[in-house]
Image 1 (tube, rainbow, N blue to C red):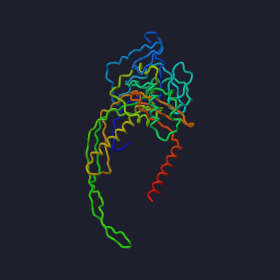
Image 2: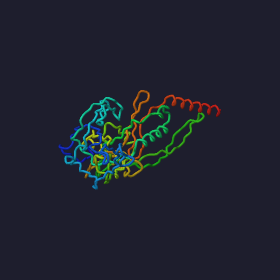
Image 3: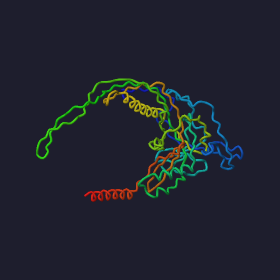
Length: 382
């Protein structure tokens, strides 16, 4: 731990212990929810923003409790609800270590994150903390397929086969994330620098003769400085999944955390949802590091002068609070050239972030074209 950083501690031992609950993605096969008209299972429909019966087409609105989304002090975890409130099973992936769901009628299913068929049927954890809130899935499968095609068209020097990838196997997933709020009092010290210019003389040889010339050289005058500031950090997001590529998840962009609704298992009907694999203790360590980095950037802006060095920041954290939420996204795994590639689609905005191979034939042809143009220009210039 940085000696110039003082975090707030006090997570009780009876809360989620470090490494206690491995990630589990859970999916309801209806979760006991049935159609009011025909009694068939219902699922959450992104297009309707309601529960839909695939048998008779009946649509049922989901009533959201008129309560505020709760944010708990970092010292309180033992009083939070546990489990998803659904009867579920999970499949544990032997490759990426994610734990993904299946419905009762499925005999086998590949992992939605890495595409591996190596999965083992296991029971869901009952001791993990229940999410406080979630953002309902808004983007449907048709939009995912369209946005994926649009994304491939924007990529340069990629195999032509990429444009023909079938994303029909895309999986809608609610991914767990911790959100942390904190008041921070930061004290900093640094050496501030002010630029000034001096004239220096130097000699050069021109046509065998020595000539004296002058030039302006920038120097820095250093002096000590110090200061302090107070800041509030709201909803610092830490993805708690190990199945999803967190770099890609952050690349998707922000979620409308102001639109969070209190958790209800009805939003999960027919969809998958992971239990966290990064627990509250480790999640706060990651969140604290993110806050520290942001705080350092803010303090750096306060340092007077033209430049600075040796910046040291001491942070004190107050009123640290957390909430556990589920954020919607689609996971696409496709194969080209014998390799698997991951793509994520934002469950609110439809934005796509993913990985794709290069076509080295196209890259080579582009290099040859540039080289030929350079040679032609040089010949013309002569």
